[in-house]
Length: 313
Image: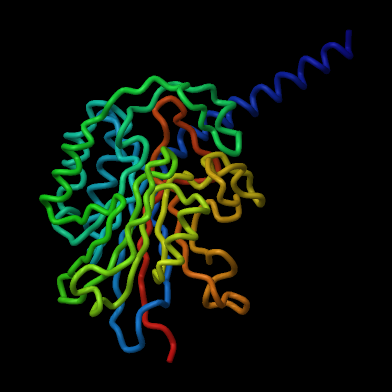
């Protein structure tokens, strides 16, 4: 009997630890932060450019804390906003999205779409998330989202639509940034734009590649196009991470060591020994989750301020 009692106590302790972990994982979805990185990729002598990278909001009308945080990002006074998609977390999220992006849409910007900008999220078996690629063709019920309305609002505000397209953004100080992007590879909507440059791009201070999901095929195509850096989202930074180990999965074929943050592609960072031949890659851990899996562990929701500085002479 004593043995059974000990087993019962042990199970009780384990159950308590699991319950506490799940509770914290839900709380962490509201512990928003701003990650800051410095990237030396501008031509020598150029003044810094502050890029705000926002991704994977998965916003719902009831998420008041998240909405207030996104509004507050305008106070960071970025020079350029890059939105890498998965804005919607609910079919009725268009109005809240336009509200929270209000002041940011006064800033020069560009965007691509993610899968949850086309189809509303649906309930999935949580175990699917642990697969290297959680997609199961035809398994999810598709509920259309107001994609065209969001696109129209962004473009009317002056943001450049980079879904399988090239573009040019003029910053407030008159400098220009060349851009090339692709629609969501997670839905196989990606098509690399035809080679070439948009008018005026020859005077751009840098060129950025933008995509929602950082599948290897698109990273290689963007790098081959000669961009100075690639900006992506989608991974949620792993969403469920282990301390001292990191992400378990990336929900694409990108290795888990690059699930979030600043890295080099395909090798080491360009500023480190052995990084020759690589380009910069920034993957955002994003600021949201599916409304059916509102947990994050050791992976706080985030936006990133990328301060682009001049390269050393």
